[in-house]
Image: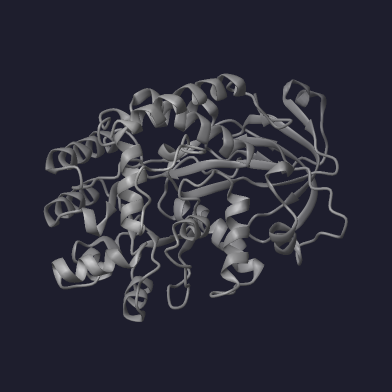
Length: 424
């Protein structure tokens, strides 16, 4: 059933122009869209939402998520307190990903998809890792996302940290998945990926005309390891495999790069994803945008699924070391749409909408919208969400799946995950 939004205040996501209008969306990813002045009787069979006093704009997308961490909230602290970033990976996140199984992955994906939609996010670019549950992991995530109503661009985080056999299994999963789905070639980070695995990943990216999705210089350890083991910087190493020139490549974090590296990155074709809250949580630094170019997107890095919050943290935390205008942060948030469109990925069509019940005490218009977005809006203002022309959130509740069922399943799988982690 198509959706008719009556009496809406429509905000063009690119020009930020405001328009009082009716909006008729068609189903699917064909971007069928009309702005009818009149509403004839034939529209009575459509899903009709009165949007008087509400704001309608394009829904959001997450440029870097880790849904496998969705059930980590409140988990017991590690037995050995981490002293640095590498130990945090070793004693927390690598214990968690080793404990994942198909059921836990499904619950994580369902919960992340639910919370994404309720925050107005209809597209997720995910970076997955489950070294003892690799086979079929990406299809499980895809099915869960689609059940709730979220479009996606997935990859498996290939790494040699658990041995060559599991790296090979990750590459095999990637190859099989890319035969039938849009996706990327996932790699963890330079310091856990051998030259042989890098080479095979590059061959896969070339074969499927894809790109890599990889963490880059998230911590100084990544650069130090690369210099010590390969006598070059991380950017030089990745460029040696052709990843910088792939327009579908996503380089995540990019915190500890020198001026020469940022210049090479800017001159290339890969995209950067900033993840402010995760960087603060891991105490690895604050993103510096100097000389990095304009191909910067925003992600949550698995901390949560709320892109409004992610943009606001990027703005406020960045004021100390990398101050930007609200408009700049807003455009970084929206850059993911340009990335997806330029690379012809499906699912982020123009009939994806978020309807905001934002009862502002002051005037809002094209000139100050970004200020309202940074200083005033939050996920509680999301009332309805349309994905592919289909109403997936109505009056702040999912329409395609039962929220209570997802929460019960998530809590059950969360307990299972935490128990399994104790044994590792």
